[in-house]
Length: 448
Image 1 (cartoon, one colour):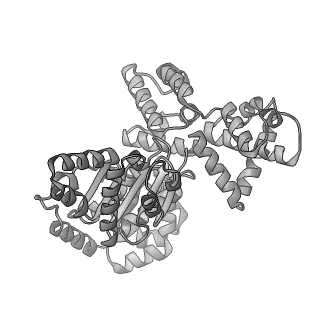
Image 2 (tube, helix red, strand yellow; image 1 turned 60 degrees about the vertical axis):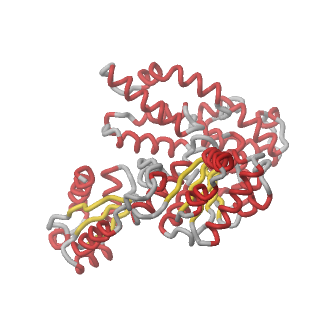
Image 3 (tube, helix red, strand yellow; image 1 turned 90 degrees about the vertical axis):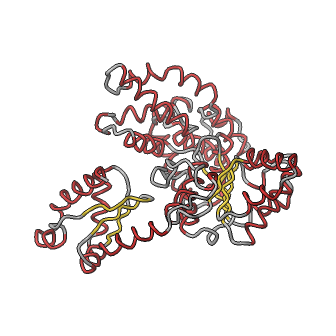
């Protein structure tokens, strides 16, 4: 908690110049202790209920803003009294995990996959908000929750964050996380050993089922039937089910209709390729986790890395880790030159594997709107051509993070102000047009 206490103290020190001395002395002169930070919320102990009420009513917004300014991250704040702390600790003692619970109900979650460490941006905010609500009220909000998106975009992180959140609130919860391959393997062994009771005990006597990469059930008809029965048993008992996939439920191949229709009973949330700013925020959170001062890591270096790794969060984080190691062993500052040197091989691999380059974006946008690449790059101003061109400009900016002048070069040497205007026009229309939102989502999915 020392780190968060320092953030709080620095924030309050800055707040002092923004409010009257009388108000500061009344509400902030007495020490405030950060009790815990959980799911992006900072719990701060105050003296009594009156102080809690006044701080909530008059200063919560200012405190949250100052904490964001000091830390670089958005934390919610909850003011609590010592009574809350006492009750919280008693509740934890009463709900310590049952040591007799099988390990797979409490030991197969990655404890680093929490909501605190998940960076929410335009590309994943809806999925993040739904997942958080599911974690707070399992079995009530969206059952099943079906999260889909490309490889390495954070589906597993978000899914396991739900499990970790629920376990934090109730350590005796039976949370089972497994991949679809593990489900297939367990079912195969149950069939060979003729031991279905143990299989059913594991998969049905639980509170939450988190199953990853459901698309791999494809063509496994007997396993699909068993999963169908498991799904029904859990659903009918109001147990939460969370599923991830690389595509929408309606696009799953060789999986029985009665299953895919059930996947659509709750809510579906997609995770798209993160935009440049979200990629930068992901790296900042990673740096904070490595205890690296952001002032030592220039923004221009983060922007440079974000522009090179734009399709996969896992690859982005791996590149950042490699650069940190490279700088450490060479005792060097973080510079663009050092990043070029340290990540040269990764740049080549990313370029080879990624569909996200300007030429491919133009090609896919053209195919989507039935406009030729030549027309998009031409000077023609026909409405449908101009619109497709602006969509391609917008996606190039979003997915590659390239500068406006650089994008201009790719679009037949257009001036950077033309690119800016095109991007701003699409961004404005996105707020008003559901049809355009769907088109951008579809194109990002194709390009992921």
